Length: 68
Image (cartoon, rainbow, N blue to C red):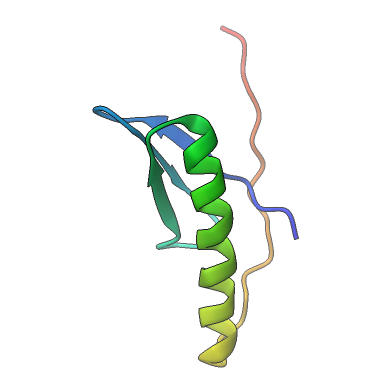
């Protein structure tokens, strides 16, 4: 599955979240670091849902850039 991830610059680091997986978040010192962490967080989140017998949400979010 391919999930959209939002990465935001924070004070001194970066944070990421997955709109289709509420509660699935990660932080890192750089964009590359937070990308690695969010991949691990997605796997962990999905494994936890499966272990608890809960459905895994299908990816539905779409990410696009908009010129202004």
